[in-house]
Image 1 (cartoon, rainbow, N blue to C red):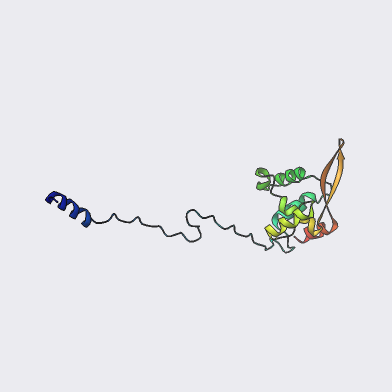
Image 2 (image 1 turned 135 degrees about the vertical axis):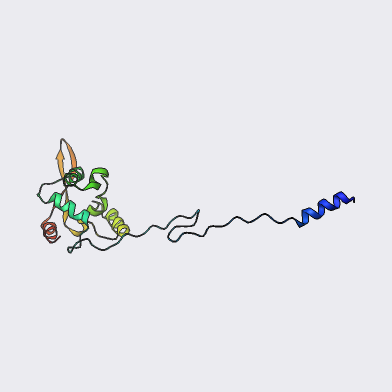
Length: 151
């Protein structure tokens, strides 16, 4: 081998390796890159002495007139009363009110951690005939009025 070849071979063997990239430590409370965050379970503590959530109290307040209302009418009544979420997002009452289907209602209660107004018996579902089609409406019960008075 020639001297030039030996020098190049020697320099390539003694070169320092490239520096390693600094790895970031995961921030506490945030998932590592590429991993999904675990969903936090909502608190099951009630917001009032009656054991009702704020949203449930708002729904009962909208229904306290005794008039049967559908979900759209309940949402409008809550929006008029100043509930900001009702103005922006119409599905806010799905878990607090509950579902007419017991299986769906049970699954939602397990997910959110509290019982719905329908399950508690504070609101009862009804159907009314409006221009030839049935519309689902909700009416506050005497048990619901008593719970609202405590809240």
